[in-house]
Length: 572
Ligand code: DON
Image (tube, rainbow, N blue to C red; front, side, top):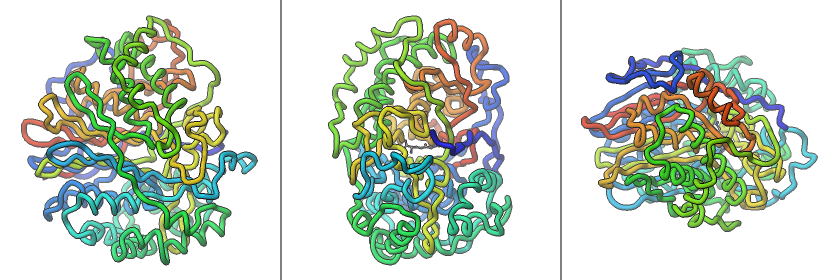
């Protein structure tokens, strides 16, 4: 449907201070994993006795650690990281996008903040019919009303400890003074240059001299610094009203977009009740709608919990059951879930253990069939996740995105930030696949002011003693849900260390397209042959994800960054 190419990003970059270590001591070869699997033992690890930050950018993680060391708490650090990522990780860090944040203070329950983009008031159900190929992905019409600034400001207002100007200052400095571009970020801009070049302000910002900033070069973003200063001085109003809002509206008028001054003034972040999943004695807090992440992952976990004990990692028996559980959970996701302010989400039913038991009983030894349709799902890693734990044990898990890399590719002229292409996460044409091959229904159809259904799954796990255990999340479109599931299950069920749990090969099923997607060269050939014999169509799909997670260890906290991408951690 879309001509846009989404790159499977599987570049591994060695960053100073983040060297991959060798195989985890004591790790034994896992029979289900291909012996040539290239990520074994390659996760990047940071350790901290007291506190830890991991993110898709080592520079942003250092910003977070510095804020913690200045006396900030986990929310201060998360907000500082969020703004810093908008500067140093422009493919996904953002001011013009949105996200979801789970905050768990040291004691007690967790809080869920929804700062997902919303459809402009002038949006309508069939607005993309006849609008041209890729209109929901590239260009002004693709953008929803940004939520990121409202979300970060609100998280800080409620839970921050340091003054707001202190937490946003590092991002301003990185934008105005510049930062040294690494190989990953240079290459990433280059890979999307054919889209960025279409819009003059994107071309001027990201392709100076008509080339992506070279590795090792100094990259400054003065207009972005100006926008961040407006936010520093006026909070959310510095973005949603006044000069920056005027620049967004002027940009919309220039390119035929829909976001108005009224849309911007009306936008607000929403506190919601987190999804709470009980899994083998552990407690998992995750994101409720407008993200599907928590419910869909909860459904998968609930189905798997009844297969006890689980077959070994990578065995055909396990992968088959996982695929069948995922197929069913995604079918429910795509049928029922949507913005809770617009549609009823049957959360209780979908998350009940009885419902899971019924689904489990349907699963036999052969692959079942998801009816209708087969679309090519694409993949990428163009969202970004960060996890923070402070010295008091407060935790934040946050996933944020412009949707695919560089969002709509439109930079707001004069304001220096990219706008999202989150409108494509709606069922822009119900029953047809979106960029990620997801076939969704009316619950996620476009309506004015509605938030498009997400798969982002920022999660926090407590151990059976209700102590903070794991903070986890990742980019990856619908595969986010299954990746977070894998990390949790690999640790809890397969007793892997966190580095091994993150490095292990991944599989994914989302109902439609009806194929079992596997990371290329990840699973043993015998496993794949056996799955084919059970009736699964196996699709090799490169590699995916950028899990950024923190786990409790005997010595404090271990921050682990996915070996598939270029993140890093910083602790103390
Ligand atoms: O909210 C969502 O589910 C998507 N916009 C996330 C996109 C994503 O993770 C892109 N990276 N592969």
